[in-house]
Image (cartoon, rainbow, N blue to C red; front, side, top):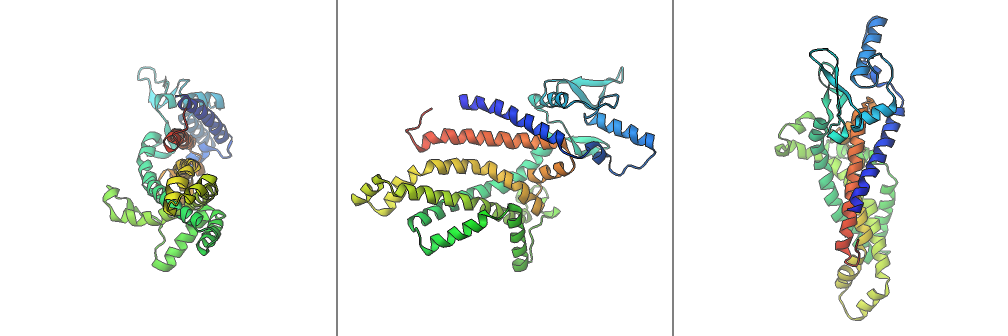
Length: 350
């Protein structure tokens, strides 16, 4: 319970820092939203003030709203005007508490429903989250299984050709940026199969789960994420297992005549699990971060692509929402990892 409560102030700190950094970023969201508007100077100024008021950057008089007020409105501690809604009797804007505390992420500045009305961010995230989960979950499972197998084989065959070859490959892979690896995989696939993996609209026809084309375009992004996570986790498994295999109780187990398989898997591997569980538990949020670049390269319409597009278009509410969700997922998985220690090692108690 204590660790769960810690999530609240941590999330608050994440939201404050994110809001300040996003607010200080260069670029004018109002001008970006106006696009290529052509008109006389008075028309331009009137539209500028109108759009700035609609998205919450300017007040009714066209003056800039302070960052503190905007944050308190975003978090839900201060009333803000409900977008595009007015009092039928007076024609004045309706104010209400509508923020994160009320479960409202607001409306996007870039994704539009009709006219200038932005789409609700909660709906966009709910629809795009499934694509990201279908990409990261298989990659997470495959990475964990392969990394464990490769790490154990390396540790039990230390300094063999297999161990040295995988070590060199791991160093190369660890030094390679995610987006560059994705480009190389895309290029290699093009030369071998005449298939780049860049997604097409036909892959996401609903229901996409029953669409075979969807799974074809899922292959290359999954391979990229697997190779990205495989490098570090396999090296960690190897180093932890080698450290355990040098302990005195392992030598005693071997002296008793136990089979090498029993020594490795029943005695050594379980004691090496704690740091491995930590990294594995943090791997899924890490994959979400890596998915931002991978989705951008392959054009995958998940949360990563949404985050990149919102950053380029200065869609501050969407950037805040994705940052907040990524931070919350990281903290929740951190809590799950802490609780799992007790299952891995019964000596650990909270």
